[in-house]
Length: 132
Image (cartoon, rainbow, N blue to C red; front, top):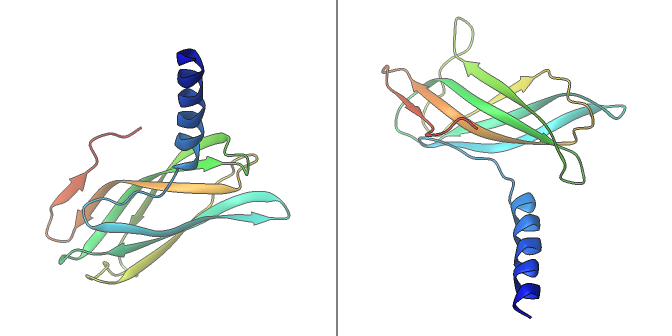
């Protein structure tokens, strides 16, 4: 009986970890939305929206994008980056910035974004503890 309980817990834990995939913000920067862009069934990239929930302007965001198919099978991981510059203004507090990334990930239909670093216009930055 105890063996059945442990087997059941392993099965539940496995399905929970798959279903628990979600976007992760950092340092007051929230991932509002991330979605793949499929054209004729082919993953041509993804877009992501970030919201600045801090009291400082943001001029750089780095992240990792994790790709899955509809069966929650992990497909691949890619790095992403957004930066302000000559024609792109820093993100003021309370505002949202959107970025589009062109990537090719075979069979991917879903993307989850985890921010790894945020850089502010005052020169400070926040980094995630782990870059898995």
